Image (cartoon, rainbow, N blue to C red; front, side):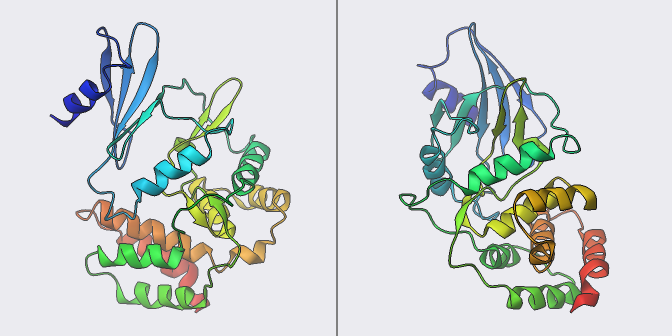
Length: 263
């Protein structure tokens, strides 16, 4: 069993007396909580779906090493291309309605990381969408036509920053004293505007809070408009690839209602 293999590999870290519990909340990977006499750990066993979903494990590990000194980065105790072992963090609910300032500070901190010596592939949202499309079953023609309009209008910036690309409450670990940004599977050098829209949509931030967040990040709302349909489409395609047995028709129709008339 794969789990037994990793537990044996981690035996120098784990004691003989430990318990392990599976957590079912993850959409991609398998997550376990391990309790020893003195510590608790989160063991993530990486999914075989990674390549189809556009995940680059080498890039993720390189970025984790690059940000090892950031206080908002939960650093691995052990890592490989197959698993990630981190401290288990007892969390409180991250309340976006009351913590928009904390989110803006964290986004700014990520985008301000010095990437001069960070040698990893970029993530261009157009290329990510193309990758997902190759792994999708037949999709609505009107959706693809509309999406092509926005894809053709988008230009990847010449100046990039470190971007997380997967902002949502499940990836923010809130303790009494610290806020950690977790799950760097889609992190890359990328377009900070795309990353900000990922946060807006990932947290489903409403209009009033959106205005506050963009103001704090010195971003004009209009700058995000061409990117919003791209990020929404990327999410639809991700779910289509990850769960091919499920229909995304309702989301596709909502997409067309929201952005189809803007062609």
